[in-house]
Length: 463
Image (tube, rainbow, N blue to C red; front, top):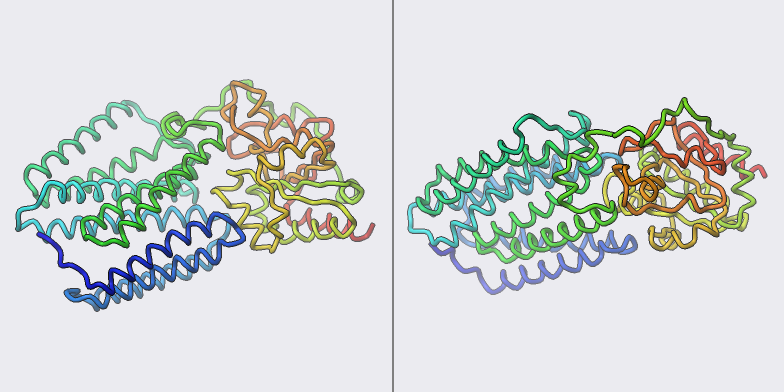
């Protein structure tokens, strides 16, 4: 069965919408143009949706309208009220819904065409969308639960895990073969159900520290599922949009893997974080650290030539980005050069720190990526680490037995002085101790990041 061709005006608008998506991705590559890129992408999608409603042959418009109203009622408050620390969970949730939608639409179209002879390539398009979209949905739900701490973030393993996974994989292959041979809607529904189970099994062994990479990969899966559904519906916008999401998600996954110094197969299949071996750290009680006061550290900062602020997840948790900017402004007013050293995987998702600091109106020129700021660390007077740990841990360079060994880090250990703002001596997300905390040139300032930064701002202004 062939879907009716669309009018010329609709094809032109769809093409314009596709161009908007491409330009939106270009804009999102820079914090300076991210807002404009986002708005351009939204405008392209709005134009495509309105155009679709003008086409003939669309039934149940009232049901579609109800679905859109419900979606807006859920999506707008969720996007506006979400905390920056929960942004990865929201991405996982929205991504999962996209994968589920692609699978459901594909299987619905398949059931509509099942009464007619279906070309094999059409069946393959449907099966790909159902398989990948279902895996993305159930995997995203589990990733959400791990990040939201509704379940343990540790890798979950169980006896006979590999044989069970192999058996599920074999069942999927059998169902794919049966679907192609019989064109049975029931078999495709079974494929959807087993794919949902496979998505859960796929995500269970992945530790919480690796979930952001997983979300990026699942986002790529959703894009591919949407593109496949676009082929099923012969819709250019879905094909282009899904392909862009799939390709950008795959590239982002690769970049995140490189930023962690690990291969993607290692992240997905090594159950990283399940066990911390002996000898990777010591208990804080076994060694002493040098603690300072806000007044002491304010003097150190105020009389420095250059200060590098290294933000991490703790900054986001404390909602301290505005206070960090106030401290930077106070130091700049005294003639101190201030930069923000941004690690690619600081926080819980790529760009987390960039978005956080942009929210506080930090000038873009003060944000420096890891590769740009590392050569400057030996000439930096103070590295002020706010809520970061693993991304500055020298174990990534010096301890071959460490779980984070090989991960590129920000070389704050090369700065003349190091100040850590932490609530306690608890380890970072990877669950290992940081030897840098015990370095003679390290000063600890304990407490909530926002409170301690506020005290630093007051102390600097009093000098």
